[in-house]
Image 1 (cartoon, rainbow, N blue to C red):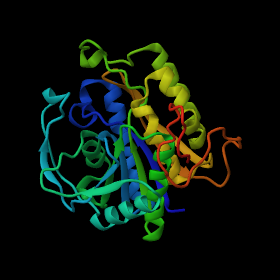
Image 2 (image 1 turned 135 degrees about the vertical axis):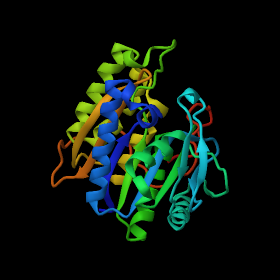
Image 3 (image 1 turned 180 degrees about the vertical axis):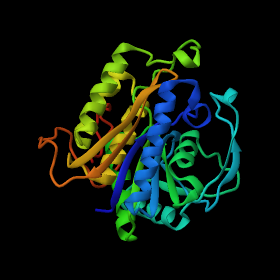
Length: 305
């Protein structure tokens, strides 16, 4: 397989800038360090990120600037201070990813200009997973309106590009689990998951994922979204499953779980296993090529997938 490793990591800047303010944040920072060590041992030569903190409206954008350089201040957590970054992007792979996405019927384009606003989640993830820019990376946006079918095709296009180039990639889903931020300020040291229900669903989600059942949690995404106010409908998990392989044949480690300003944050790593953790019949249909919206709410119907 083209995937050396799969990761789920949180996006908020607290883990990078002020982990000492809360023991859960410090644990997430240690989880990031463990994931970084796994990347170094994996033999990977590329990081491919899907970040829910980079929203797009029309199609999918792929970062292709070879060396983005800027000083970033998070629009919500600006009081934490600025983050200066100099990243290493694989421009050639970004072009290959865009072409693979287009070949599967998606609208995709690369972006590459000085000062393009790299999102907080990507900066945090690359700063902690890839210190010194040891590996080149590519980042793809999270389309706000893409549904499961379109997101699966985007993940499969990432795998197409990796395999066509003979690369060995780490696929990184930068996402929260539950995404309910505290409605009122909470002291950093007292941060907690914003609702008991969210916490229970997060833990159940991680229990299943920790068993290596990646496709099972991908199939659970719709229910999880309703019950726990999931981050971007858990599109990052759909993308990750499609990029790595839609089954339950993984060995997984939940490195850390805890609150980040009320949201559910976790660091999880997944490697291919010799056998499936569970052999289930999946209810959700699969799709290989995106052919447009089905227009399921219109009386006349529409194109299928």
